Amino acid sequence: MKLSDQKIRDCSEGIIQFVDTSILPVNSVYLGVNFLFDEILGRAVLRPGTTQLGNQIVSGKSCIGLYQHITTAGLKVPIAIFNDSSDINADIYALSGATWSLAKNDITKDLKVRFETFLDTTIAVNGAESMSTDDGTNWVITGGNLDVGNMPAVTMIREWQDRLFAAGDPVYPDRLYFSSIQNGVTISWTSGNGYIDIEPEEGAGAISALAKVPGYFLIFKERSLKRWDGSSTYPDDLITIGTPTQESVIMTRQCCYYFNKRGIYETTGGYPRKISRRIQKIIDAIPASYYSKISGWGTGEQIIYSIGDISIDDLDLTNCVIIYNIESQNWSLLSFPKEFKLWHQYIDSDGDELIMAGDDDGNIWKIFEGDDDDGSPINWLIQYQSQEFGTRGRKKELSKYVIYTKNVRNGIFTCRIDEKGEFRPLGNKSKVNNDVEEIIGSISGRYFEFRIQGQGKSVEIIGIDFPEVNVTLNYVG
Image (cartoon, rainbow, N blue to C red; front, side):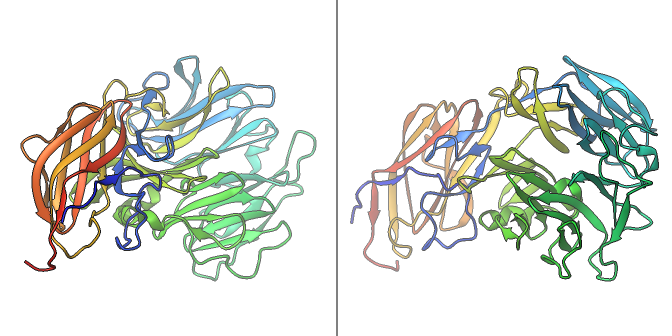
């Protein structure tokens, strides 16, 4: 029995995994690498490229601090921190024009640096030093309008309700410190300040991150999340699922998103909702050794997480990043030539809001700029959901495939049959070189997984037609 033409023409739901084909949304894919699914709804669109921001700062070193100092007067100074070439100390650099220049040298090496801007002053903490700057280039370790010389030695800092809140004291790991309320353009850590201890007896680990949403201050531990309304913490945990590090917490669009080994969660101050169920196979592939290295950023439209190197089925993928579109609620998986250690907003001299990321080789990159990765084409892959063509049990014979794309040159079309063996080219001609490509190759089986992969620029995958599908009447044989 010959079926009418079968089609795959919509992938607007993005990646969905661990769902049986009987209830699987037909407009989803099993896996996409370096495709976005919300640029042209229904199509898989290759992500934009990466462009270096300024010069290489120091070869072979990982970014341990990244920020942009912005004042109400309009001053904008990107800040980056790396160990020096000898690994004796770390140094602070500021971007001026297209050049990263040394702003402060000889701070403690290897320690991750966190930032916050309050009263037009940026404060930086790493557990060993507390520093502040009002111009992005000159740093003080005592005085200043944030009284940095008197604040406790902490690793986390956050502004809320006209105070600075700090945590990460190795002597008091459950303690949340707060400054005085601002008095004009200053605060104090010796008068009007204080602290609260966040249930040290509960066994949830030390405070690991701080965040805020409208009405609440959020205090993360490794295995719990609490909220504070400004007068007292609530007696019970909001949830007994915490986060390992400050960099895995993203605040955007009046929501807080955070990573846990179980997945990605979203909260506006109420009970958190897990949003990563669709990509659970990717979440499960993140090595446990990388949990403490997870880092992310939010744009108001997307949340972005670096998740390291992962293996999915027969694919080994490096320097991976996952992206969640808040509006369409779909997920994408990206892979980059460099490992992005830290992320931050970058507002350029024209006022355009971009994303920058610091890598593991002394560079800062503008993300989603250009159409290639620093001159190299972008590798890509799309794997569709298993196709049963009406019934799972009956055997089918396929012989013709019409593939619709844009800007694909030397793509490869492969298939795996009945979830057995490897993905293999179809027939003698498996290359996709044109926007409409007809491929002839006979295969038979009960269900089929199709892949298209290649490298290039500005690629779009539109879909596949199957004009020759013949089905046997028997369920055996």
